[in-house]
Length: 282
Image 1 (cartoon, rainbow, N blue to C red):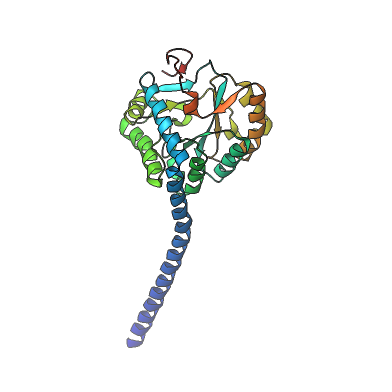
Image 2: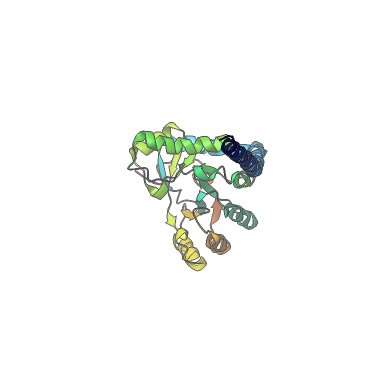
């Protein structure tokens, strides 16, 4: 009996030691994963505190506040200026850095609508967007269709993404894009209460289908018109075709006399009545 007890005690001791070893291993793995995340958050704080990011955030907040006095949902900017906005949904992802780098190389801005569940994994991508002076906006936490959801669920999705962004050190988002374009009056009431303008799109490149670089370019250019908001993606899957399509999109739009701007820049009325020349949602 004593021998059996000794064997049991020995086995328990070995299990305990194995458990300690596993815990130490897990702790080391967690520490290894946490270090880049901490560095990314620090980078977001630095980028957000830069003079450029602060200036962009202040200017965008003024534009949205002015727009919200007249409208709640925007589909297109003014037709009186040959300006177009390139927008990117569903990031950040492993492709966001490539999109941002390409835009900077082409000397054009983009407006990014982020999904909250990806933020902790790619904080450095958010830092890169802010460092470039690009608006970083709200696209919910989990990317659900909002219209079928109750008010409490919609608020959790919208405010939750905004709070995750500010928790990383980014400015409070002023624009909101509903996933799949699904929204209702409840969505609008929530976004207005949070100081956000709902932004839809004029042109859907359908790049998420990965139809090939040429088709993405063709859709973007075919739908181009003054005030257009072009929808693309930097997350949600393989976005290498989107990155590859950007140089041709920018070149052809410039050849047609368009200036590429951010969504807030597109919405600056410059003395024009918001009731004229704009396309709004219901």
